[in-house]
Length: 424
Image 1 (spheres, rainbow, N blue to C red):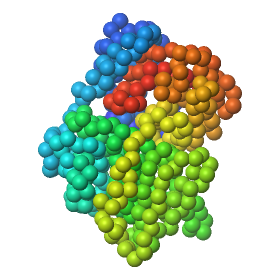
Image 2 (tube, one colour):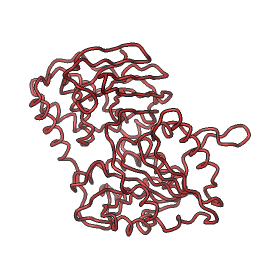
Image 3 (spheres, rainbow, N blue to C red):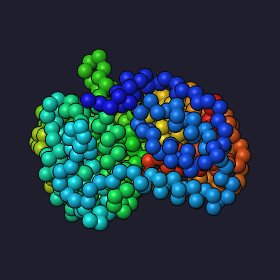
């Protein structure tokens, strides 16, 4: 059974407007309000009203001095760091143990001093698939790379198990817990999987491209959209545009009877078209003959080696975002209170001009640009344009609300204290 809050979230319409919080006043005890914010489950819509109210209160707490910003950043990340941790031993574990065991995951690879984190995603489908299959093929390669390996088992064994029934949210919780438990570089998180795990790599990797350093999909493809003649005309929303800044290796056999090559070929062409349009997209399509649904030549070690040296850039100067999840409100240095699944957002920083240019093909209300000294000089006048029209010119102020809400994931590289709202 799903928790009631999660069930309500899954039933919520994607594009509904967030509830409007009551009028805010500066909190008498800002730390207590920050602590309450970190207690709320950010993955569900049921908590959004209270979340919005707390953030609005905290936005009224200015961070006028650099020392204030550093102190509150340390405080927020310290609170985040007190969240759940994982056991430091390899083998079989459950995320939920009461009222019944649920959320099986296996730990392996380098569990002492890992230099990276690999989420190994198993194959399967309706009624089939298990974490041990991923453990078997990824345990050795992860250990050779000195990476910690987490091999979760989907919560519900469906055709799209990695995005069904709360599994996607849970995978992110596992990543965050691992980063709390070990001193792993947050810029060295990788996703890989075979068959349905390849689908999970494509999809979760794209939805959370700002979280990962590299992706390696084996004999699995994203969800296609077919034309009237049965040809692949597109890929499900929230995948291709988001992959602009992520190194990605896609493996496919030309005679695979379970995952025919037409979808990955079409998806790779779409990635190439996106590269022409937006730049970026450092992907490689690796197709080989006559291996059916087997692993690539050299096994998973050969696949991982193609992305193993990749390091995430948390603040790329250009970002393309096609939102896919209502609860995923931050993407690199963009924030959207109620992300619109029909949108394509293109955002680019011109550091020389201290300027940010954003285009959005839909109503951009609630869409913010997050800023710090890695992107612009916040002590000088910053100019922000939306669809060619100036929406802000000035010095963006640092405040606690933006800092706290961007610290919720516990990712120190994606914490920002300044924002500019693009549309009201």
